[in-house]
Length: 312
Image (cartoon, rainbow, N blue to C red; front, side, top):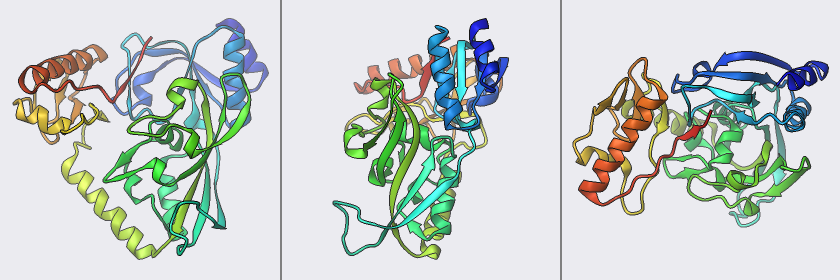
């Protein structure tokens, strides 16, 4: 670890020691990271990843922390905060989008992985570009959204994603079209290939700013009405099983409000596990195991966690 700290300092890359991870995820759960690295740009991000490998220190790439659960012991290694990077959003006008409606005019939007998804949606609105309305309100970064092919209200990232620039596990920067990224329900190739997403390009059709704004406002109102946004959580806790909905199954089993320690199935939306205050990672995992067992026994469905548990 000392070797990595010296290398980061020599490269001018900021870091903190023993940083509480509960402050960097929406669940507000997690112990300290040995190192919490804060790259300012893409060059520093790539350097931090390389230096950690050279020092033999394991690393974890963190976005907004909206779909993860850190262990109570924290993280024995370097957490690299991608959202610390400063990057802009660029628009390239009049782009041909193969396979899409040729009667529509498309623009390309290029954005760094550390940008918040909400910022990308607002930039699309400001340029009267439609296609990302479904993503407004998803509390993650662009990189995180691409990594898990985030989706809501009938839309997914793969619907508008054109290509991704990323750092391979071997240290090479490549750009791959969306068709090569194995984008499917809550999955991309990055779960297997160890790549670090650097930026993404989206193709968005031109539309009416007032219509785009109205749809964004409607979807946000629906989120506020149905989701427990007033309590810390990691969003949808379980993936949607084939032929059913996790929240409906949990509710059907009488588990609305079911608790374990400081963690509970949300009273407002059974698809969310929330932190009632002081919940631990152990509380959340125990609750998830209990819910899964009860749902399996009563309905036959085997729920799979959507939240990602980051091992210490």
